[in-house]
Image (tube, rainbow over all chains, first blue to last red):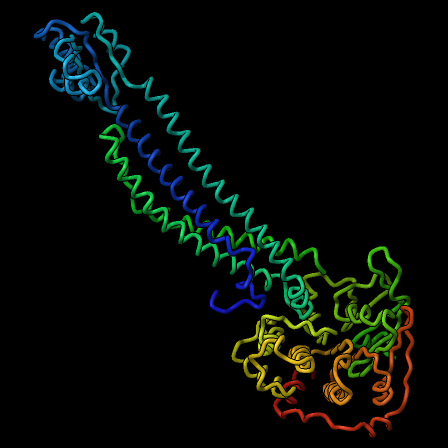
Length: 290
Length: 257
């Protein structure tokens, strides 16, 4: 299909030589945006799911060795239906958690609250408000945190990032369409004379449109391949950076085979968009000729 | 004259043509071309010869009057139906209008490719026709490397390869010497004998009188018809045309019959 040179010698044209580079940049953007959308989607989903199965109970700081309150609350939690497990966080672990924030020197001196990590059955969640009231009655000052409040805001933020990434995909397609319309119209005007001759010897619009469409597809695929080739190492680099720097704050993101297939299809989607745009542009322009 | 039952190849009735809001360049043009006829189209520069040919090869539509081509009223032909009609009209344009990036072979092959012919068929027919017009050794040459006469023969080969029912030539003798002009005319006459209806627009009155075909004369956008000279004058015509190859002859015959 592409092997034969076109009758219009479009392959000699200069006005659309930049098209592969523009498409390459667009595909590069699209792949990064798409990968970001996938990552954010996964993270949001995992946090949402993870948080919905946990509670944290916090007992105010007290004298060392005061385990009576802890035992009361643990017993109360463990007999609540829907609670799978309730484990107190060891004091050393808590100290290790806060140490990076306040420094080793202070950790031993200040009174620390006790935290209880509660895992609940996602299918039969306990009534958090009721639980909160009962625990507060048993141990004044105890708090139950179901992570909902802050998680809700965080999830909203992540969804916004995801939507923005998808909007970038739309933007990339729009820029491709606009550019191909421009280069195709320029090509039509450059080859106006030859196109008129071809019309007069009986060429249908589709015959001429096919040549422009094949050219746009070839340039689109070339640019798409370049863009993908640049985007994959960039993705890998970002992955490595995040893996090293986040230190467990961000959950790990893994791309499935389907995700890689989708990323691989992005340049094809952009190239097909270029082809379809060229075809429609030629038909629309030639329809004004006799 | 053709009758209403037999519209002939071409029929004009009170046809007028104007470009935009300008004056009419053709006024009340009425004539008919019977199938298999040979006509010269003469007239001063600006008399409307090229405009009349543009109507015939469907580059323009009349602004008034009725024009039928192959029995169809062109005013009622949809844009989608134009290519099929145009493929039955072969045109040798005044400036040849070859596609500059294509070789002689590809230029001549273009009408067949456009019509969706198979490459094997194209290769055979194009090579044969180029040999017939004496360009066997220039098949791969670009138009810019060919002489005016050679370009013209490529244009003629392109015009006839689609086996047109109607062959139009706009000033084909304008850029060649008298010897070549006469040879071209004999070539057109041979195609005409094979059944193609031919219209040749020319300034060359000597040639018109020598060959003695019916003459359509345009003057100020109006058309008159006369039949100068006689067939006898044709006998005096000098050089005989390059003999057409048997295969080419059979092939063109098949196309027009």
